[in-house]
Structure formats: structure tokens, C-alpha cells
Image: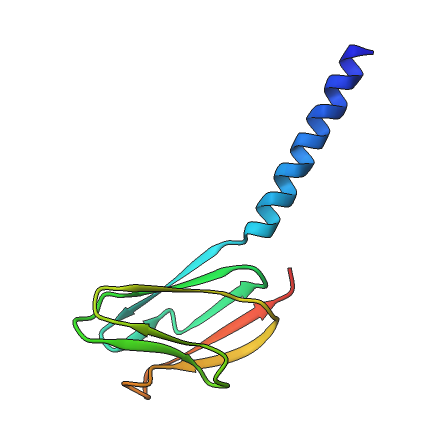
Length: 108
């Protein structure tokens, strides 16, 4: 009986670890360099985090085309966004509108 109790406990702990990792999501890094988002198109899932890293020497933004979010990204900084709904969303830099990117977000 003791062995089966251990097996049940192990199963519960593994299941809880899986649920916790599923909720946490992944972090997807978009580098800002040479006046461009690299990569320009990323795929993510609801709950993932998009992290923009500005390695340029000038300030940028990551601004949703629909106005849902607007991250200021001074030179040398990082900004994060947790994606909360599925869909395809374009974004751009308000300072340099020719800089564009696309987020393709799928359900979990």
C-alpha cells in the first residue's frame, strides 16, 4: 500500500509541474538592431512573453497597430509583453514607422 501511495504522489507532483509550466509560457526574444525587428515575424501562444531587446544606439517603440499596447524602448533597454489573446497582430516603431513586425498568436 505504501508503494501505491508513493506512485500516486509522484503522479500528482508530475501533473502539477506540467500545469505550472504550461501556465508560465515561453519567452520569445525579438532583437531591435539596425533599425529592424529581428525576427520581423514571430509565432507565439497565448500566455507567452514577447521580449524586445533594443541593441540599437537610438530609441524605439514596439506599438500595436490596433493601439492595444505601446512599449517605449530606449537604447540598450528591454520591454516585455505577455500575449493574452490569439490572432495576428502587426506592430511598428512610432519613431521609425517603416520598422514593422508581426505577432502570430495561437491558443495554448
